[in-house]
Amino acid sequence: MVYETRKRWSKSVVLYTVFMLVPLLWLAVLSLQPNSVSVRTANVFPSPVSLENYRYIFAHENWVQGYANAVIYVAINLVLTLAVSLPAAFAFSRYRFAGRDQAFFFAFVLRLIPPAIMIVPLVQMFSAVDLVDTHLAVALTHCLFTVPISIWILEGFMSSIPIEVDEIAAVDGYARSSFFLRILLPQIRTGIGVAAFFSFMFSWVELTIANALTTVDAKPIGVVMRLVAEPHGGVHIGISAAASILMLIPGILLVWLLRRHLARGFSMGRVG
Image (cartoon, rainbow, N blue to C red; front, side):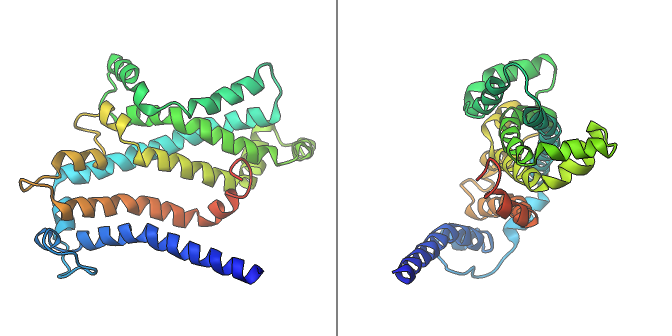
């Protein structure tokens, strides 16, 4: 019975994996063959293999700049999110103060707000301080959604470390800041990796706010795809597919670099 159950589960996992990978493989095929072939035939493998779609992207400043813009504001968002959420999570984890539970719950509720309903007030606010069409404006706005979930995740990891560790560190002469930097952070690096992963995922794929807050200089590649995906008078399947593949690369690299932390993190703390 156990063997049969495991066999059925194994088949389900294989089918699900194939179902998820087929669109990605098809995307890769479309990006590696001429567009004239893609519109006429449905090849399982690219034939002939061509890099003309990628050459087109890297030869045009709009595409390259769009890709660079996305990388820049996502990196800023990650730094700001961790800089804010780490001390905030530490406060929620180690201190008891009036309204603590309500504040912690409210911080998580902020993550449930649909980004689209924030566009009008955000555009007005950033226009007033002349920050529209800047990487900082997009990064700060994304922080409204990435900081709450990061606090929620990191607080769970910090709370799993006994308070006695703090007391022992104090006896050994560690100041609160030294304890935080030298002892606590290394012990929750798995949680930091998970928080960074969720922050990256939101900021990298979010386009509604990024489109509203940018006009020329800071537009991400996802918006550029919509604007210039018709270089030859019609939808260019090959170029769009190549751009999509390029958008997948940072996420794949991040998952690869954080794979050990993610595997542990999804079974620990608030993620479990």
